Length: 420
Length: 158
Image 1: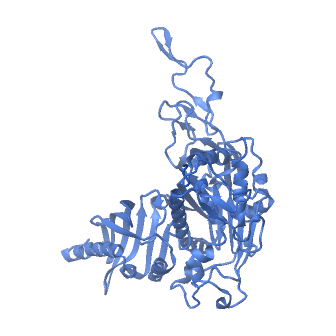
Image 2: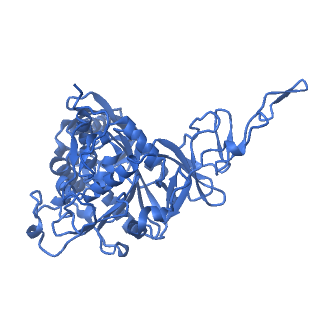
Image 3: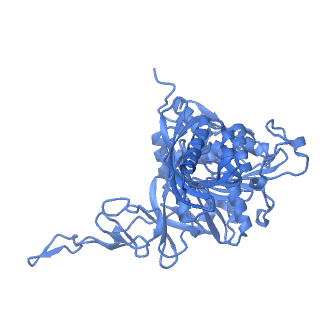
């Protein structure tokens, strides 16, 4: 008899995506195919903010999927993204996480030297060693410096944000996002200089897609995040919208806080406590900013690697770096704008207490992802449901739908089930 | 500098009492170690050394610490765990105008139900301590951690 708990291949119930086979989260071969087709294929992956590398030679080391890459500003001011793998013996030579390397990169193993663009510019003993009137060794005559540079990625920058792709045949970044999501991207990255506030790093023992789904799941914030509800941030009279690109891979969850009614009259959530107040309310000292266009929170998922967070005054780019089907590193880069007042910067920093690995409303997201994954791995033949709001995929003007998750899996299936 | 044995005893006792309190599971004990206007920050070493202001937790008053306790007890969904602090003897930098500037290394071991004990977080405390009628209190406690990754989430105070 064949096992019913551990299937050999992934089986979807029908053409729809409202029932997701748990094997999508638990299988090594599927995960590798995802790396191949999403992270290393024709997808723009987030790598850094330009404000992290303002000067020529400035670099940061990061990852796309599991591959180590260096994001470096060239002498001409252009941003290059090159793979951190020496063309000679393949070693990941760059060990610093950031710094300045004006004279290029040198692999310590055999001192091969590369320009900031990734071109090979120096090979020790290339012409061999002269001894007793003879030349010993050296690279063969057919060795080409041009053919032995580092792997160069295609780079897109917009509004101070850097994306890269291993596949140079990729469409433009603007076409990749599509007009709807590009609008929300430009809303935050509207040309103002960014100021880096710092990083948070956490390793979440769950499949990387669960984080994308978490930020596409408008069902949970008012339920899991009791803190939101307790202090009146999440209210039933909030106005909301869910929007996607034409491929349904990216999404924006847009919330405008309602002020119409007395909070107690509109909240239907049991954990709401009208008399509950913070002892020190500075963490929730929200000030509307003109560029919001009224929306108090917009969470934008940029498939597969990034989440752009504007949650009241707190701003971050969150990067997903998968490491195996059951784990990913989640890197938060909080930022402000260079022309922010000191008061606004302090406000953004205080509100950062809501987010990150210890955040009042983010720590519990990591926890639920961990306990989803650990359950999935024991019973991959089962399914997870995403049927709230029906089986359709489309934009909504409310939050009571799992349409964004269904949309993401529609796209996932298109790519994963394609013949090549 | 600290000149008498009693002062040194009071300082080491503060460190021991704090570790005992945050390991006890009785979170209400924790804010009492601080002055009304205080600083408590849990910050990655990377941000601290590069001058980035972001912290993983950043509180500026005893009331904010009480709000965190409320979050731990009432709102934050999390896997329950024990924590155990191992804190080094304090390194006393200076005493200036009654204010003690000191630091100590720490390791926090986390034990989840039915799981092995693992190193959860490692770093050092950078402290400013003042004498009050209720004994020594932290005016500022910076928790600067070496650990490059938080294993999923950090719920309880360090």
